[in-house]
Image 1 (cartoon, one colour):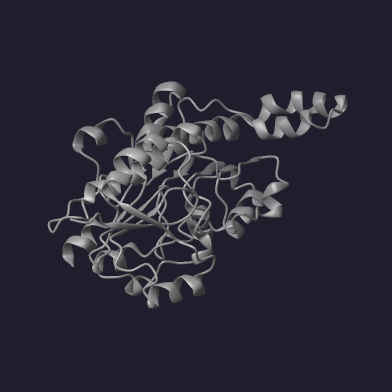
Image 2: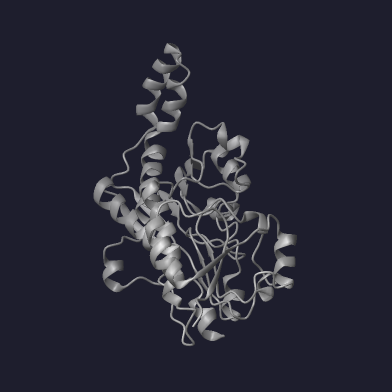
Amino acid sequence: MPKPTILYIGESIKYNQKFYEGEFLSRFNVIRSEEKDRVCFIDALKTKKYGDFSATHRPHFQTEGEMGQWDAKLIPLLPPSVRIFARVGAGFNWADTDVLGQHKIWYANGAGASDEEVSDTALYMILSIFRNFTRSQFAARTTDPEIFNATHKLIPTISHNPRGHILGIIGLGNISKKFAYKARTALGMEIHYFDVVRASVDEEHRLVATVADCISLHTTLNAYIQDLIDARALALMKPGSRVLNTARGQVVNEDALVAALKSGHISAAGLDVHYHEPQVASELAGMANVTLTTHIGGGALDARINFELNAMKNALAVRPDRESIGEPLTPVNAKAFNAA
């Protein structure tokens, strides 16, 4: 029986060459996508340039964005033989996973590969926005002794230890559970959470529900969650509280956040992700009480290696060469797939 064909999109394997050349190539016939834009890619699907391939595989982050949104216009053009889209990364706002499921196509991401890295980034943000480390860095980098001394005197009068403060987590998934554990055990914070799925009684017992001194966002991005933290939500937060976002930029309305920071209602913010990414809001960039990074929450070599490996393992787990297909290790659209 011939091996199933997988349409490989993007850069070559970088870290798991032995697994790719052995296990992966022994099970798949790999063809590489040649299109550099959405129009050409759609035309290739319409003309069946790549035949009846069984899976698509995207092993790296910074490729394939030129194909735009995988939506109801593009997905139906995939051949009926496609069983899975295996991709790196944790986010999936660029693809309509429900439409994929409706076409009996699994969508699998790299969930779990960067849990430690993203939760560590959130921990860094907590320390920075409670202790005003960014303000201190701004001052130190001026190399001006007068500014140094002034900031040295100011910081102790406006900073707090995180211990004893309430961390409110929005979206209780694997990353935020790790973050909650680290913030509680290392920093002595108390935790409360909101999630569309309630945690177990034992898990809830370890969490403390009260008014948060800082909220941390750990949600996916979709039409319902965009601008979740808007002017109204910020106004409901206690005066002087803080906002931390390592999820997706458009979960927080930046204009509303800027206004809340200027008024002092929100005392500080930590943002690894940005609304118009890669463009960072200039007003936020100029604020000494805002810690900004370049979407590097999961940016560690360990995560890259595991993301790449997991994408291949997800494709293999589905067994698209068999009539009775399997389930990927980290499915995103199980509900839509099983309902189809």
